[in-house]
Length: 121
Image 1 (cartoon, rainbow, N blue to C red):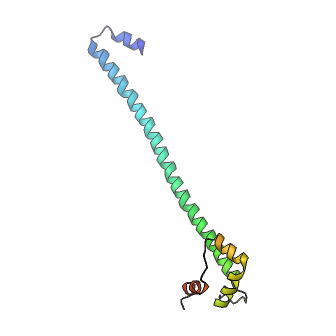
Image 2 (cartoon, rainbow, N blue to C red):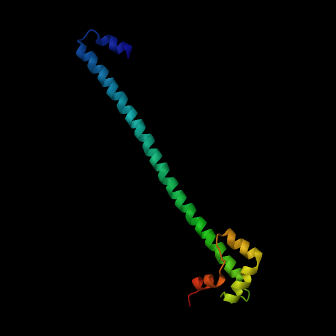
């Protein structure tokens, strides 16, 4: 830049100042473009992260539902694909079943209420 500015010293100051302003505007324009690229990339990554979080939550919910379904299938002692109140009471007496239900964050302190909530018929 010095050589170019040195060449402009023979001209009136106006041209010297105009060149300096031109270089400054061009410099800030380039910085603005680079900043825009970084911001756009960051927004795209944030969008992908949001979609990943939603997908992960959906997968976790599916796994949870499969585990909950399996525990109720295991409680069905006679294999009738229905869970009676008596089968539920017997299953809740088993410490392993209770521990598994607690691991799924299901609290079954009142078996009768649970049964009514699960099967309103």
